Image (cartoon, rainbow, N blue to C red; front, side, top):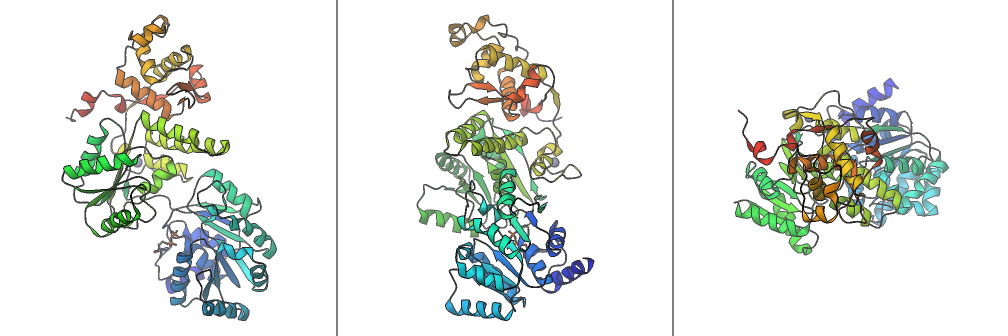
Amino acid sequence: MPRDLASAEALLRDVFGFESFRPGQGEIVDAVTQGRDVLAIMPTGGGKSLCFQLPALVRPGLTVVISPLIALMRDQVRALREAGVAAGALTSGNTQDETDAVFDALHSGDLKLLYLAPERLASGGTARLLAEAGVSLIAVDEAHCVSQWGHDFRPDYLRIGALRRDLDVPVAAFTATADEETREEIVARLFGGGTPDVFLRGFDRPNIHLAFSPKDNPRKQILGFADARRGQPGIVYCGTRAKTETLAQALSQDGHVALAYHGGMDPERRRDVEARFAVEDGLIVVATVAFGMGVDKPDIRWVAHADLPKSIEAYYQEIGRSGRDGGPAETLTLYGPDDIRLRRSQIDEGLAPPERRIADHGRLNALLGLAEAQGCRRRVLLGYFGESPAADCGHCDLCDAPPETFDGTEAVRKALSAALRTGENFGAGHLIDILRGQATEKVKARGHDGLPTFGVGQDLSQSQWQAVFRQMMGFDLMRPDPERHGALVMTDRALPILKGEESVRLRRDVMAPRANRATPKA
Ligand code: ADP
Ligand code: ZN
């Protein structure tokens, strides 16, 4: 084993021209080289390919690499050949000559890496070919394609399990998709339910500064953030197409070069925006999530979310488009109760099966937990991806200015009680009126001014109560009922608090009324 690793390090230098392993690569290379089943979760750009290419060279025999991305396979084969490695590909894009050359190399046993498009697995010919080729490792790129619930499902990926059984060789699977559900599906389908060594590495992007802010005056907040980064290329993500247009206009009026981008624009116009963003300095693209896949600009200096993304994965991907060059990058994500309502109803009204919806609520919860975090955000973010940093990052808004918290148990119990006593039929606005003792028409009409909860929350202002409700939704103590517009319903998580078995801490800084928050520090 030590000899393998030593030679791996020599190959790293001599073949790939790299000085050292990136975080996580060394351990993964080691495990794959030793012939263990491995599931490695690394972010895009983290350096996954090396983790199977290098072991392929150290191990005897042939490594089969299955990938859905033909262009990427061809790039890798070209790069490997240039480095003097015997590699080939069997994909639909091959010329007959290329295919013949690959077959010759396979028969003579010269090939070290064979890239294979998943469709190839459907043919009996491929199975026979591989059975005779001395395969010693199967590497699976984009392993989440085996997941039926994912966006990238490839039915042919389901054949990999059988291939593994037939060849009886280890599998090394790689993906950037980190959530638990997908991970379990990959293990079940690629490893026959066995227990691969799971590695989750390299998710930290220390050059990206993380920050969240409750929505206050979102347009002003975004304009302010952009103004402080004038002339630097950035992306503003919006929840709706209409908002991309209005915000782009507002930014333009403020002297920026800002272009809207969304799926409803014609393809030519979209390509034009992509092209301009790639080459022009200081352009801002105001976009829906449609802007992403094709963005390959290394020096995006900032990303702002005018609306809350739909999950923690989406958040990570979107902020991750900044600072690919390793240079400093700033991010700001705005969120408010309307975002939470919108995202919840999108999940509930979607066509996904119930298990999927439960998982989606979980992913949204993770993001809300990050939004309402009380300590280092990077710890919370990386914790979600399974990493546990040794120290606070020192590079997020909460490390910059640790928020003051207070025991919010009493306030939360009052809020829960107001909801329960009114049959969980009302939204935050009405509940706050009851708590603050506001005898509005609606309150009087329903006799809510006679409730024991009426007026018990006069110690907090309207906006402070809003912050309490938002944090409660962030901690998933209450959820809007999808069936009854805006009605807030208590979740099981809130029970121990209601019963007095648990306490909750709330952040004081996000509770401050607007005027106080704007006061400059002495
Ligand atoms: P992905 O994880 O998205 O498949 P790649 O394997 O394509 O990422 O690697 C991303 C980039 O990082 C490539 O340009 C690759 O050459 C580079 N890279 C990978 N490993 C190292 C390393 N140990 N040192 C320096 N650069 C590396
Ligand atoms: Zn931090």
